[in-house]
Length: 347
Image (cartoon, rainbow, N blue to C red; front, side):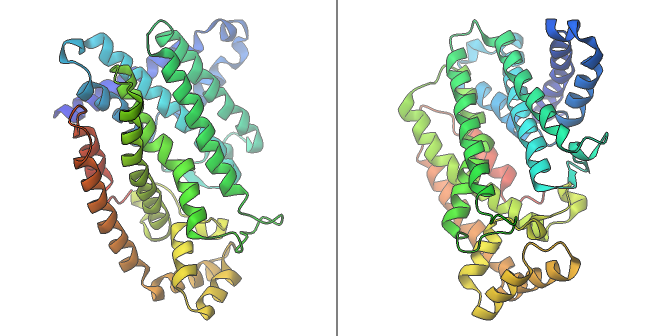
């Protein structure tokens, strides 16, 4: 077992303890009738996935803190902080899947499709969010970085819900995408706020705050470096939703039938002929195989695979340059690790 596998195992071992912490809170002892429901909510929604965001918190902390501070207790705390980020992502996904009428998440049915839940799943999302702050208080309230961490959770939640609002308000009242609003600028705003901040900036910033590297200028330099990489991550998601293999990605792509403002759509509207654009507008957002196929056919004729490949190479080179330009006072290894994981990813 290599070091990365050992860290993943150590990280996973923390999860059941956190569920026990939540189930052991005074309120749930008093209203024990829902304790097992809480367990089901957390075991189904927070344990799956690649855990990249949570692990990145731990990796950043270990690479940036003074070596004399690394011990079992602090490594455990870094894992707890990483799981709090995973919980943040989990409640966002529960609600996002509900809003998008998605069918699968992480290779299994979306939570709202289980247990005859439907819209009641929204409250389970809020349960996970509230429990996140319970865990943060339990483990970190006496730490000097507690307030900074809380502020980061609140600010990134605000930014992510802003991105979700941008996403949902790109639709007409009939639920169809408003093509008058759809543009590459809109996509970039959605990707920045809905994905990039909580996917890349937040885990790095959490690791740095715990390591007591809280210099404002340094955090801003890192934000400027990783947000474009986070947007690249969303572009990858859009591409894989359309062209990825569901057996590899763990989800069935629904962006076309859901009428999402994606990078592929924005590119097609930019580069397509008037006839191709008209064909997209006629079929986009329709949940039938023929309409989906027609949109994908336009993407193929435009040469979307090559366009995406060119974008990926250009973005990768820009990211390498940005990482090399970061101050030497901060470890560059977490950033290289991010790039290695997402460059040419297939899931």
